[in-house]
Image 1 (cartoon, rainbow, N blue to C red):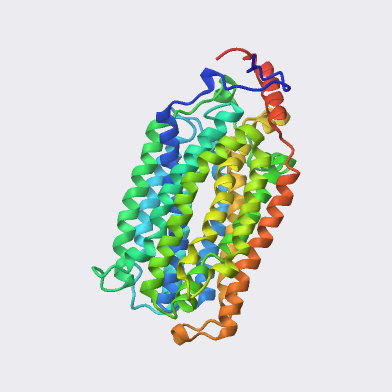
Image 2 (cartoon, rainbow, N blue to C red):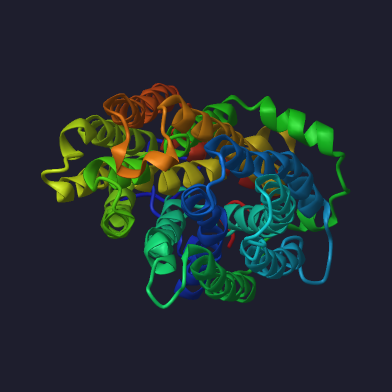
Length: 477
């Protein structure tokens, strides 16, 4: 008979009935993920096409606007994580932060895009910078506790993967909307892109807030008796303990390199579509970009269940490595698929890349919950907030560096907005080479790191068994 005994690492492990999460709780957690997906990506999706293409702002300044707020945000994440770990209230450790953060992020997302169109370039720069810093602060107040909440919802190795797969599935569904933001702001009902982004941002804000509040209502915070009475811990020792965890550093570095590689060139496909495939026709390019993102996200909807199934059969690490090889292939075939003669070939690479990222967001988040167990075993502390915050910090560090590089990379290509569809052959060639080479190198680094990740399924169940014996809960619900 298959065994569910966590102390028996040689057995084929089954999920205990009491470890399974109800559909409502998975849906609630996934609603929070959808809100975070919209919060975390909408500015990046709209930044270049509004600030550079529509307003004429220098790409370097746009890159700074994408990077500086995320850098400040990343510095605050560990403080927010430790704050929520140490918080005690009648509503739990996480939910008060989630309510304030979700509502505040929605409000300031609207304010962000109502920047005065007649201001000077530097006036717009400072307005956007200040408001976006405030927006990202509220986003982190929601996202860090929400992520920590997910790490404690179930102690089971495979149920964690199922939870994160459900979250990744619905995040991919939400991201389909992000793919069409450029096309939405170009609708003829709006007089120009600036008017379009103002009204589209209002609708996005309402959606962000509603989804965040659904997560607050439907997710139950779980904690042991020891955690409920545990004394507050200083922030720096918590951070040092997390950074001393080799498994955490490997996992965080995988996400760091993937974010660095992808987001540093995230705007280049848009430029390639506008100025290479369609010779400067923004309307035609906006439709192709919309379909490109849709193919990615619909592919993700299909791939997430496949990834979850494979992870329970092959193991998390092995499944992640295989999927990352598909992402590598997707970046390399861009050379053949970006063609003015056959524009719809543009939609093939994202299918391959989507498989890699479906595995990354599903499996890495599930692995992080396993790392939380390892951290508790070694330190005696259950610091999901700090672990999730430091994980997010590495992710945002990669994103920050990427956005800082993105404007420099566009300037490096020799792109000149005034030339429209008449960009030089050297500019187009440089764009295409960077769009392939930078993310491909990042994926190779992620594969190498995944290869040495140390927490296997058997080791995870060993850790759980040791923790339950320590708590005196082995064999009890």
